[in-house]
Image (tube, rainbow over all chains, first blue to last red; front, side):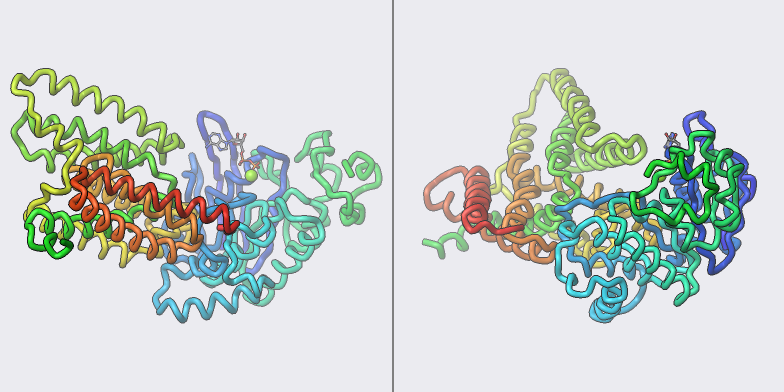
Length: 259
Length: 271
Ligand SMILES: Nc1ncnc2c1ncn2[C@@H]1O[C@H](COP(=O)(O)OP(=O)(O)O)[C@@H](O)[C@H]1O
Ligand SMILES: [Mg+2]
């Protein structure tokens, strides 16, 4: 599905990503984790074709990102906590944006959009000004917008930022559901290593280089964590309710984690 | 008395030209409102000064040289703000001063300093000719067809450029097309009504309508109505009371804006 080979990205003479090799299969949920500034967003933007590789290649289904994008088969949720609150559209209009490049009458598109707003649990908010929704609600609408175009792959950049913990767990639960129901490949950037591990097939530990790529259980081995975060495992950000990580982490590390 | 208006040639032209302008500029005003481009029309119109000066001095059509200059300046502004993340307003400010200065320097070289240049800057809706109306009509037709075909896509790009791109939309092309359309509309409307009224007609309709409505469709329809009403009212009032028509229209626009803004406060409308 996504095939990244020897990818390096240099921005303003700084090596942001170095020699990344990553293969994501169809139907997988992959979490990209790593400290702040480790290049997660850069990797997503390179997969999208917004940033050019300095060397190496990115292929999605055998195509270059800029060609793949033209088919509208890619769903993307940017790292953004809120949108222009004054932008004059309804929640439903935003979902319909996802169909803008598809043929069909507006009436029919609106009907489909009404199904999707239910699907993401936002029924009742159809006519509501999008800018006045909460961060989490906007995110759901944005997901519906991405899903309505029936993408093969969904790229989410820190989708849980600004969403409270309970909603977060729901959200991952929801992602798992759409992954299973629609066989959509999901690549998401996340801060919450502990939480996310329960919902993904694979974890990609990124810090300029790809330090780890494999199943979540293996990820929580001391060696991997240390190579990714250095000795300062405190960098892992956890919510107070986060107990998940304790199942995975060696005892001595749990102490070091900020709770 | 109202009937008189339609029998007087220049008034009929002013009304027809004014209404067409009201239509095309209030459609643009919606996008200027959404993009927070309110400064762009003022910027382009001042930048066009350089283009107009070149046209007058070189003896070529100022409309043409002004349009070309405005489009180029508009595209440069767009390019700068897209690539350097420079905010539109800042880059406009830089180009604006440069072009203004260029225009003034060019004019200072000319001995037969042309008063038409100032008519061009301040305009007069009562001097609209049939020829002007035809040119304006053609431009309006093209613009409306453009918006009819790409409205949803442009809206999506205004909402979020990157997301639109991921959805397979050529957001760059649409962005530059929109910018060029605004630039040409600015120059054409300056020639007809002067820069002050041109800015008012491109900024105030959507800004006014957004005082009472929040959804784009309602903003669009009501700004069209407000704008047409204002232009007709302004021309009629200025004719009846022998006032300068451009200024009268601007005053009517501003009055409606303030009335709606105050009404909104009083009724505590949450828009
Ligand atoms: N356009 C850019 N030009 C130069 N440096 C950049 C650019 N975008 C990001 N960076 C740098 O690249 C590094 C990685 O950024 P980013 O990918 O946003 O990290 P993350 O999403 O993991 O927090 C940071 O040090 C950031 O300052
Ligand atoms: Mg990031």
